[in-house]
Image 1 (cartoon, rainbow, N blue to C red):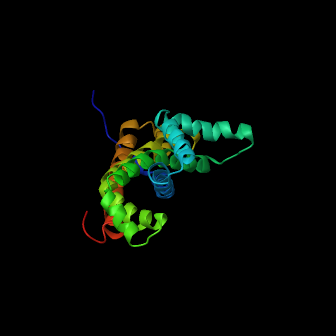
Image 2: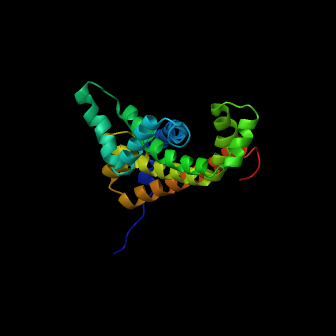
Image 3: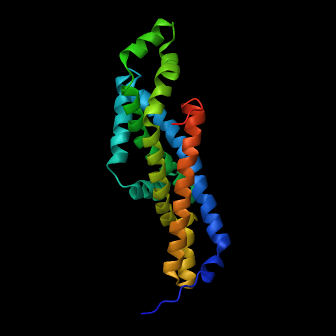
Length: 224
């Protein structure tokens, strides 16, 4: 059966697509930054703090996130928390869910990097009269991030793709925009072809941005 492609009906909604891209970038920018910050704290708590109770709490949080679907986590935050009097907008719920999810996965990724630091490096830091926190900050964290930066970048890209789930609570991100346009013009192939292309570009840009950020922040301006 012959099929006539018509992308004009898609690009009539360029403003809707643009808004979706902006919200997707916002979700990954804010959610990614806060999620990695949570991951650094979680990795410190699990692998370096020497506080068994904190290690247990963070461990339970990590297992909870890794063994439940992101969609359920999102629904719990958006639909469940209002029952306890905590009302959130769609965007707030999406951001919290992404931070909650990425924080757990990045905790384990960064912890793996921390565990690769040799005892000799720790003793060298201690011999310079550094406090335990200073050793973590100046001796442990930087080399650990260097080792796991590619894995952390991949996890961030996965979370960006997972942000498509946020369309289920009417966050007007890219997938929501694609669904909205498809429901108006019934050009499903063209709409999702464009959405796929945009996600591809965003993933490439995100990887390059993380590569540049790593070279500047983690690898001391050297290419990773």
